[in-house]
Image (cartoon, rainbow, N blue to C red; front, top):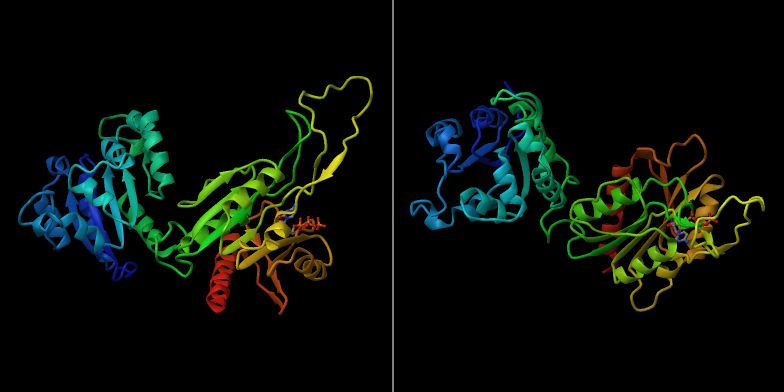
Length: 414
Ligand code: CTP
């Protein structure tokens, strides 16, 4: 028997109008085999490729096709349909359907259902290769990703139209695997507003390095990748918090549902952080440059003949210390990081005191640890009450654990 990896899941499959619609019939079977209930809605175009009768036979449920059909729950089917689902799956999603989703149109059952939902949506696109690669489609995909929509495929290969390239709908089993991931991983997408242990809370996170200009082309920077800070922002949002991420230059994608403010210098990070207050939790995960060039040159410094230029440095504002010292809008929980190469715990304790924060996440950045830019982190939590060493985990796991700890501390403080 097939493993019941989707036992109890309630899925809503929206079938769009494409040749790949026939594969969606197999998808229904595969999903049900794994224990999920599958409701099906079909667009008008989908019915040109497969019949509602087939979908009905395979899903064992009535299939909806018409937004205004009087027999279909007095015209409220789209609301009820999405309310009853744990996940919406759109397969195949045509270029037209993606465009209408990206623009929030709602002129038929499929688009109305997709707009009336606060649930996650997983999309399996299928279209001609040039339609997929067209900038308009790619723009729509990018904005849907920004909204937190998940994608599976399209695959590369020969297409029904005889062309080769990306555009073929992912195979049903690949879609099933994506459904399993979407239902399992809470950080893939934020929960609906108002749910989760940080619902109703506001979290501000700094992340990444800062760049301090020497002249218009050169800067002082550091090796921070921003992975830990971005993971914390994603985890805070996944826990239901309204989340603002103040980020230095990184190569990372914006976490879904998080408001991202992009800055370059420590001073800009400080200003954006203060502007983001008030907050319940502040997490200073950024590797803020301690110094800036006192008098950055407006013109590119030429090599000339005078030898290497002497750079005079000035101290940057300490954002963590400033937030911790605020009156009136000091966050309930102020969390700092201590990146140390030696005497980790002593230095972290000293930092806790000196900066006036409530908790320090201490991690070693000694050579060979692979923390900077790496996927894992081994941290020790330092508070006035003592220390707690956490095992080596992925940065996402550290983020989730830290967010749960913050939620517990907030719950205890109110
Ligand atoms: N931090 C900050 N603003 C700064 C410097 C640091 O907000 N100008 C924050 C970091 O985000 C981190 C914590 O302070 O949460 C400690 O950063 P770290 O670089 O380890 O400490 P420093 O204060 O720079 O002290 P030192 O360089 O002496 O270790």
